[in-house]
Length: 301
Image (cartoon, rainbow, N blue to C red; front, side, top):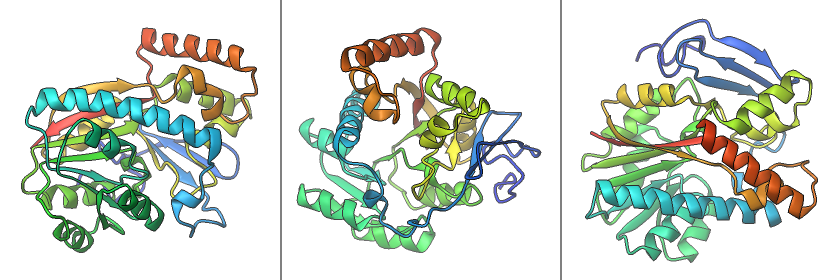
C-alpha cells in the first residue's frame, strides 16, 4: 500500500524520512518533504476513554462551531448539486452533531443516514429524526454491519472532518475498506484541515517561539481522538487518487466566522468589536492569499 503502514513513511505519497518538530511534551508533528503532509504524535489524555462529544466545550465554542459547519454545509450542498443534480441517498460517515444532515434535510435531500462511533452523537441524531447506525471503526466487518442496517444503498458519501482523526498507520487501509464497501457510490465528499492555512501557519509560528497553546488547540491536544493529520491539498489529492478515485471539484473553506473568531480561538481575549474587525481582516487576508485552513474535495469512482 505504498508504505502506508510504515510509521516513517508519508501516508499520502509514501516518501520516507519525515521532518519532525516538537511543540512541548504532548505534541510532535512530522512533515513530509515531498507532499507537505503532516502527521501528529499526540500524548493520550487521561480522559481518552470518554465519548468524544463529552470532551468538547459547550456554550460559545459549540455555538460558533455550529455556525461554521452550517455555513460550510450550505456551500458543500451547492457544489454537490452541481455535480449530482438528482442528489439523494446521502450517507454522512462520522456525522457528529448532525449539522450537515440538518442542512441536507432543509434543502430537501432524501433519504439521509448517519454513521458514528459516539453513542452521544447517535442519540442526538436519532432524536432529530435521522436514520443512524453505529460504526465503531472502519474495519471491513464493522463497515458491513453498519451499512447492512441502512434502509438504502448510499450513492453520495461524506467524510467531513473525519479523516484527520484516523490512525496514520491504518488510514489508507481503512479508506480503501470504505471504498470497497460502497458499490453504489457516485460521489465521495471529503473535508480536511490543511497546513497551508493562515491559522495553521500562525499557530506554528507561535509554537516555534515557545507559545504552544494555539498549535495544541489546532491539533486538539487534550482530547481523544486528536487531529492525527494535517493535509496539504497535494497530499489529499494523492491519497484519494491512490484509492482509485477521480477528483472532479475542489473547494477551499475558512474554519472560522469573522464574528466568532474569539470563540474558536481560546485565549484570544478581545472586546467583541475589536475581535470582529480582527476576524474580518484575517478572513480577507486568507481569501486574498488563498490560505484557507480547510479544503473539500469531491471525487468519483
